[in-house]
Amino acid sequence: MGYRLVCIDMDGTLLNSCKQISKTTKASLLKAHQREVQIVITTGRVYIDAAYYASQIGLRSPIIASNGAYIRDQQSQQLIYQSLLHEKLALRILDICKRYHVSPNFHTPQQEYYGGIYLAIRWLVFCFRNWITGNKSSVKRKYVPNYRQWRRVFAKEQDRMIKCIIIHFNKEKLAKIRNELSRIAELEVVSSASNNIEVNYKGTSKGKGVEILARHYGIPREEIIAIGDNENDLSMIEYAGLGVAMGNALDFVKEKADYITDTNDNDGVAKVIDKFVLNS
Image (cartoon, rainbow, N blue to C red; front, side, top):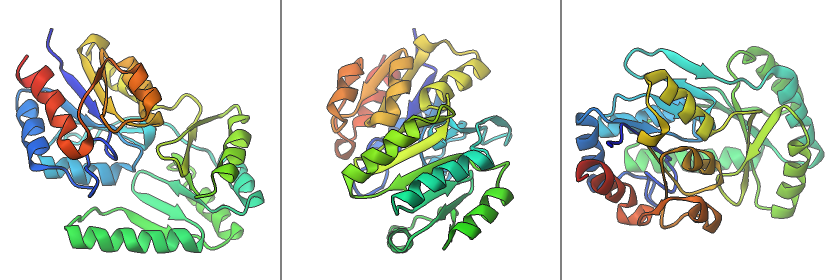
């Protein structure tokens, strides 16, 4: 049996600690891609950001973005799947954040809207780092200063809003927010780091996204590899025929994986590709 679809998380997996893809990893992925293996970046980030990194490798495979909420074929630009956070649901999320004095961050496939001074500074630092490293990702980012402006954003983007991420370093406050959000039947709530909550429409996940894409191409789950490191990767690791946890993955992710590779700073992804795709 040969693997025909490899789904790879970005942060903590494909990207090293410097948020870059190593030359070794690029070379292994490109070799597999040239053998007509679908190498699919599967990320919580927005589509346009993931597409930038795919272009750095030379990949033309589809992309699963925003935790499975948005799947697009890069070559044909066909939208394969989209899961929306509708306007009223986005407002409910905003109201919960407002009660805890926390500023959310809402995403469309091409744009990120954020509130709060902390996030404004964070994105300035992020953009400066990208400029230093040569990252020319064309993600648009816009600061939303107040509730009235958020209502306008939700009305304008009602057919494009696909994800919310809440970032805060007070873990107790985050836990309370997560508990409230989890009680809303229409929401799917996960995390990709200790300081965040990621929110999509119910039933949206990386695992579901992999399943949808595999069905689109007629690829059985036994011929799929999924590689990740965090909670939001767990669904695809469990779905794939070969679920791989990074060496730097959380312990409960490692427990669910079929195989544990090296860390993201030691070419863990390349080692999986070499072992199970190129040398099998």
